[in-house]
Length: 310
Image (cartoon, rainbow, N blue to C red; front, side, top):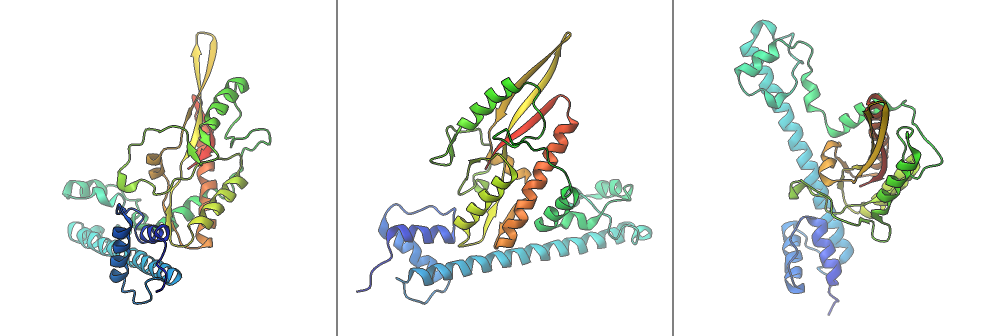
């Protein structure tokens, strides 16, 4: 009799098909779950061939992702068409002028919103239907030549010079100690107000000191996850410098904020299918840092430094 697939591998294959699945409590039910998955994806090969099963699941998942992307693309085109027809009906004399000038498409649900839009001539309809890849590329075009504020002395990514180095280093060291290198986790729970459906299935934490370490970290994640397409989001922990005037005295204080799952929603999500995708995300991380550096330089009351990434 041929050997069965090991139970650990059974669990891996189930999660490969659906990372959010609720795993059955015992081995027999787990094997039944995998069998149901193989039937669902029309797998007719040997049920003990780990490699063939894994490739079949990967092929199915990638096909589903491609179909979902195509469905979203079609929905965008349908929405564009509907809005153009609506403008043609409501503003016949302005049809050509407003052909490609809509923004905030989700806010335009009634006549009042359309009238507000009528007085806004310089908006772009296609702007609201950008893909994530297009949005990342647009951000990159803005920051690709942005110089970085770098230093060889610190073990964090520096966005600006600290006013009080002593106080800064005390808080910095406390923040860095929250990361457990042996487990790649934070040493205590942070406040995470996020929909459980959006919560990362596998968080990665790492103290990062420079841009090259970000590249290395992303390469490591890609090597571990490349068996199937995966979505990636990121958040940086930050050290906040606050300056307050107390009479004639300037008071400087520091605090740190840990990476939080909920904050990853601020970043553009990207589905990683290839080495090219992860290289694109490396550029995007640099652009995010450049944006944070730009905002830090503009804010004279609060400044921030980055020290870790999720």
